[in-house]
Length: 214
Image (cartoon, rainbow, N blue to C red; front, side, top):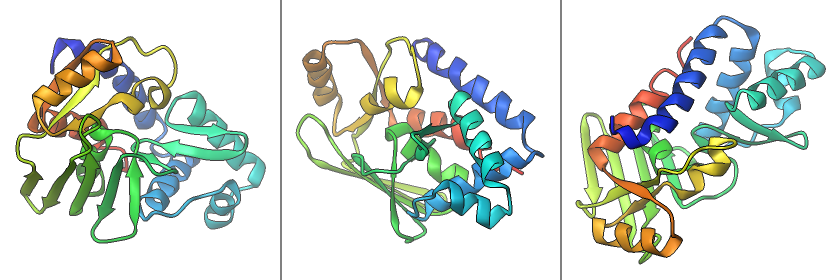
């Protein structure tokens, strides 16, 4: 992967190592329950997790706090705000998994990682921040269809100081072409790199491919 992504990859490796270490633990069941719920467009509360998994609400809350500390989810003021790759509020990146209810991804790369995580057909609908042109990427079996076909992903290369969901995700977007990505970079005033969809899909697979592994 490109050297400019070193900071992101380091963050991802930490998360993957942590998830592997808890795979057989109760906290992993909590994490998976959140992801499956959000994948269906269903918001999830602490009591939903406690009731469905038969876990004490106090223990459930501690698990959520730990997942937040490890930057696996965002748990604030008693609410689950996000859980990579899913947002709990509408973003630019709408996702439909196997024609289920719509859900939303935190960023463009997160959206592209959902098919390998869920192992299902996925339709991603987004838009170019520069011109607002609609962009769609459809994963159907082994076939990937993109409109417009010269769409790319742009990602800032600034250092991640806090949570990836706060510092990086809001700025990782699809663009309908490299020219618009370059114009956007000049507008926002910080450095970034353009990634082909093929590169971005591989990054998405690298991040989320094993997120639901039991």
